[in-house]
Length: 119
Image 1 (spheres, rainbow, N blue to C red):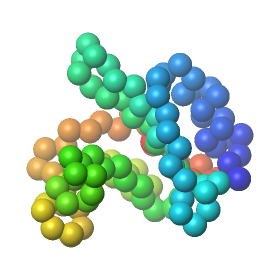
Image 2 (cartoon, helix red, strand yellow):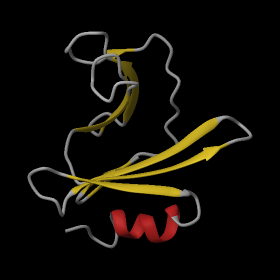
Image 3 (cartoon, rainbow, N blue to C red):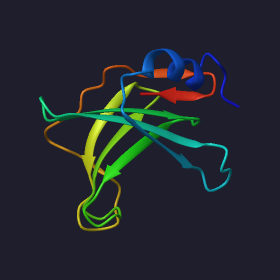
């Protein structure tokens, strides 16, 4: 379960009012666990502000694709062990994401909790 100092604490204090949209994507193995995705589109700056909270170890990724699959997707992933946010893409093949030459994403905060991490 998520502790009050983890995701629930973050959601009630820091996320409140900062994001206008949210979506919970359940894990296939356990629908009570998964990834919480929060976002807000800033029309003035033409930027999207994203927060992800997940009960996981290692890494988490979000991909954007015109076709809804991995082929051709633009991906951003977070590695908890290094605290690194990586802008990557998948070419038109089923291969491991490749790091983009230009890193367009900015990590504001990455927090490893007892039950996962919040980026």
